[in-house]
Amino acid sequence: MLSAGDREEISRGLAQGQAGVVIAARIGRHPSVVSREITRHGGRDRYRASRAGRVAAWARRRPKTRKLDADPGLRAQVLARLRAGYSPDQVAGRLRHEHPAEQACRVSHEAIYSWIYALPKGELARQGILLRSGRTHRRPRGRSASTSPKAPRSPTTRPTSTSSPANSTTDPGVHSATEPQQKSSPTF
Image 1: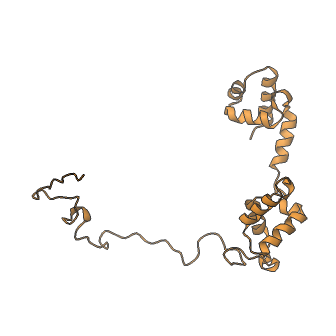
Image 2 (image 1 turned 135 degrees about the vertical axis):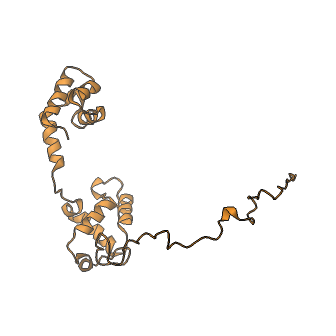
Image 3 (image 1 turned 60 degrees about the vertical axis):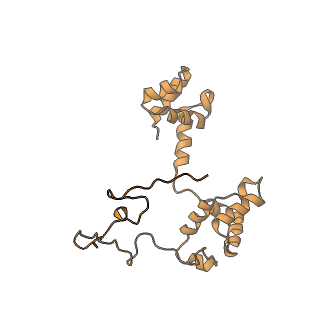
């Protein structure tokens, strides 16, 4: 995250016609950080430090409103498809396919999952949404009580091996020192 001082230095450097690499060295940042900052906030001709700072602060705001919470029409379409048994992946794909020119009707599957898991507990079942696994409740994160790590075995409790496959004389690729190696003739 760039500070207000870093943005002022970028602005001064651009006004002096300096290259992004020189500006980056002066503020102690990687050149790609400076390049992205300049590109994101108007380019070399229109970059202003104060405006860039305001825009960056606005973009960092949390919590952000989810797209499905902000658009009731889109939420209704997604809910209808989820109730019909579509997965969030399929819903996102169908919306993209059916509304190719409408950016407002596009939503990613990650946004749908984020919205689903932000719902209050039990709301999935009340909404009539079954997840693809058939669960109506979210699975808790972390380890369950039944899954416990196995304790390592000590060398005394390990089973002893009578012979290893590499020492076996039945392996055609391995020959003992006393056994003569057969020469194979090429077949044509």
